Amino acid sequence: VAAPGETLRKDESGITCIKKCIHSIVEYFLLAVEKDRRKSLYAVQTERQEQARRSVLISCPARTNEKKFLKYLSRHGDIKNYFFYESYGVYAVVEFANQESVASLLEGTDVPSISHESMVPFKSRLLSLKNLGSVDSPKQQLGKQCQSQTTPPINELIQRLSKEESIDQQVTSLTEAYQLTEENSRLRFLVCSLLSDIAAAYFPESIIKPFGSSVNGFGKLGCDLDMFLDLDGITGKRANMPQSDLSLEYQMKRANSERAVTQSILSVIGECVDQFGPGCVGVQKILNARCPLVRFAHQPSGFQCDLTANNRVAMKSTELLYLYGELDPRVRCLVFTVRCWARAHGITSSIPGAWITNFSLTIMVLFFLQKRSPPIIPTLNHLRDLAGPADQSVIEGNDCTFVSDFSKIQLQNNTETLEQLLREFFDFYATFAFSKMSINIRKGKEQNKPEVAMLHIQNPFETSLNVSKNVNASQLERFVALCQESSWLFQQSETNTPRGGKGGNTSTPWGLAAILLPSQVSGVKSRKRRKREPASERIKSLLESLKSNSQQKQKKT
Ligand code: CTP
Ligand code: MG
Image 1 (cartoon, rainbow, N blue to C red):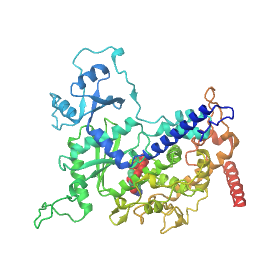
Image 2 (cartoon, helix red, strand yellow):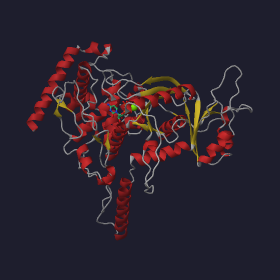
Image 3 (cartoon, helix red, strand yellow):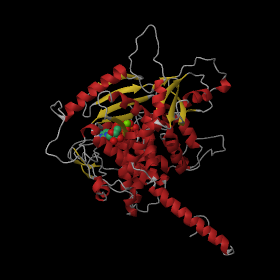
Image 4 (cartoon, rainbow, N blue to C red):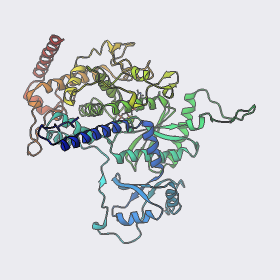
């Protein structure tokens, strides 16, 4: 029962042995408790939404005295949490302990008086701090550091990774630099809460919730904020009403289809956001898309926002991705690394087009992890089989049932390192039969393609849909070529030798840092590097090394 790394020596006294045993047993139980403490996405969302309702967003003058600021706000109640960040100026997110404090604060807030322009008299929890007193000396200003809400530039990241001592550490370091911070996550929920206040003008029981990468565990700092207007609070039937012969129902306007209702609701809310929403700019209503949406920028937070309605299947896929990310820490690390690698090589883009999307890439990573031997994560069908009665969910005829209780999921004992997994990921997709097969995380097995498409990835819940329908031949070819190149680079000893080290001055890119450098085979060719060796030579050697690699594999099997 000794804890790992704490072997019991023969010459140790009985007391020491007992102490160590007790220590190990306590550790064991703490770990078990920790394992079960994983919250469902629903629980996380409920907590964050409540936190957001008790929060305000305040634009602060550059020279704000933090102490004075907090003292001023505390007159309305206890402040539970606060932080500052920079985006077109300095902002503060302030969370009060009680919601009454927010009401009291708003009560004492003035309407701006501007002589030349007129104000739209819409009051919200987005405020501006005015400093009427003397300007404070720099010493008295913000003590708390402004939190960064963006990822480091790729060059900085490459340098940082080059200093790590193993590829595993590089992957972990990349994940740490890219993942959403606690503050960024709070800010995302606060923006949703501010927008809920606008939607509430029409639909008081509605709520705007984040979905997609803002909450699925795979979001990187700076990713867009996907939101959906949840009207279930209105349309849900009232339970526990005593039975009676009589009942009342609302008279409601009828529309031709559910889609038409979604479009008209989004049109009105979009108009409201555009006309009255403080800080919301560049509002575009994209109502004829397969999934109608309103797109805009929320300037105070710097978030690019996509507001949808009636998008419950997407919420389910968000929950599923969150669950997979929580099952094993390697899942999130690998997804972050592959997403970053794809972005660095222009395989994904922030502009819509024929590129592979982050969502598709994530499913590809999940599929790869299901195909390991033994699998690192279970198939969606297995998660469905583990579901209890409360997990049953059918949305628009699609079976969206899967288990929500993490403790019911038994994982297999796969001990592969992040380094091994990353290499194998590139090998796997460098040789995947994209022309014939479809990627299917429901079954955890490739299936024959049901339709003509360059890349076929079955939508996990709307199973007749292809998540990557938009991808064209050249984008898929680039992806495969880059997988081949990265796989080849990982086989080169110069790529795999740590260089520089933490204390060293030199930090020549190696390992993960090396595969993030501009590629030789993709469209983004670096002229400087191409001069050293003709591209045809490199590709030839690349193909040869792949060939020998697959021969070796065949031999093994
Ligand atoms: N979604 C889906 N089917 C698609 C595309 C998206 O179900 N074909 C859902 C997924 O739940 C996805 C969410 O909509 O997570 C948001 O889509 P998108 O913003 O494209 O992807 P994200 O996962 O948010 O990734 P990114 O960081 O690139 O925004
Ligand atoms: Mg998104």
